[in-house]
Amino acid sequence: MSFHVTLVPRAQHDIAEIHEWIRSRSPEGADRWRLALNKALERLEHNPEFYGLAEEDQLVEDEIREFLFKTRRGRVFRGIFTVDENEVFVLHVRSSERGPLAADEIL
Image 1: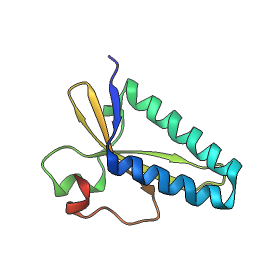
Image 2: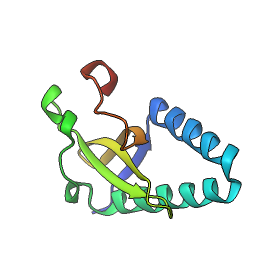
Image 3: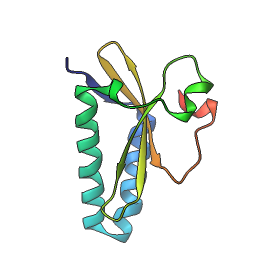
């Protein structure tokens, strides 16, 4: 079964902000980061239940999961998402160095 992956506006904003921050330091690094993100999103299309529950899952009724991906330099990023039938909604993308989301930031 294939899932449709949707980036909600907040996730789109997160991605643009991170990409711009990396790009200001290394245009090639930003391109590689975006490629790593795109590969992670492609994996979500095939089996989103493979990924574990996010720490934030305990804050809300819906299941909140996370996928991780990293840069060539080893910096880890998290994608926080939820699944509804055959659709995956990516809610946030952020550095793993940042703490967990607050309940009011999740949805």
